[in-house]
Length: 349
Image (cartoon, rainbow, N blue to C red; front, side, top):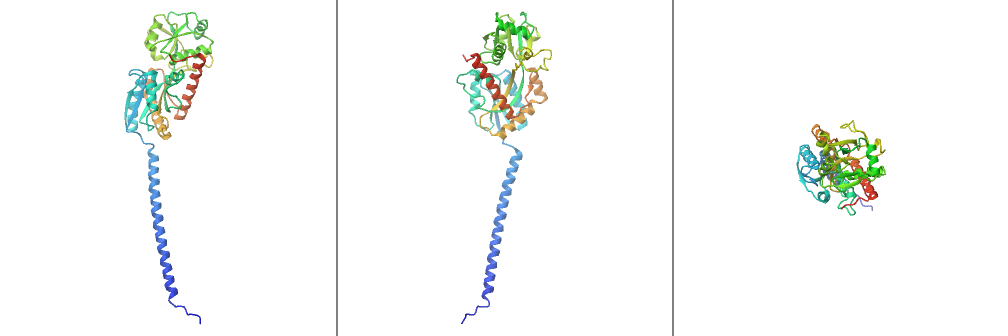
């Protein structure tokens, strides 16, 4: 006969199954809540970190690859003081002169890529590398360009006893090369490179006389030993005021608001465009967000009234490029001067 089922068996089974379902659902719900809370906490921390931005080092060292007292040092100390306030950190300036700026530059290229070490230097950073057969650093690959601090035109000047008053007259004298010598702060300096560019673009061949420092060259010009020179306005402020040298033109593609009465060289030699500039760099592989943060703060500082006043003494304007634009600018400048050095046979001594 068929076996009769226990009337209570189904009830017990139903209760047991129900309890198992409840236990499973409660356990799953608790696990879900824990995971959700953990994820929310992590998301909150990540959101907070993003809102706060990249971590700023407690101490930032700005390396200046030249001795104290020059424009590089002056700009670094002015920037450092304001950067410390803006980032609520400590900023120190470390002068590391030698090898035309290479010693300080290499030190920064080998530093930790955490924003704690920066380089502040001038356009000589790229011109010096351009004349080296085996440069100690690559201006493009060995660094993370951070910000263009400031830039401005240079001056074409002549000796007060020369007959030249226009760019055309100077260029003609350079072409004739009749006792036409020009001086600079040394081989690979922006003064030499700018004048050699003028030589190349005007089919001229003025003779270069390198000096150990631009002040020595200016002294020789005042003594009648040099006929022409391209240099920064700041380097000849005194002689200009005393009428010991004569300005002829500016080197930028457009006229300068600081010297609006002076024409540009490009008005006679189309396309001629040279500026003196200063920039800030970090070691390679410095995180992009940190580079962007430093760029934004440096640009704000550069555009402040105090820094503008300082820049105007050098006849320069604050930089306005973001980090990527500055990287492209450095690459263009580096290629420009490497090409010129190769074409004109300019090599380090």
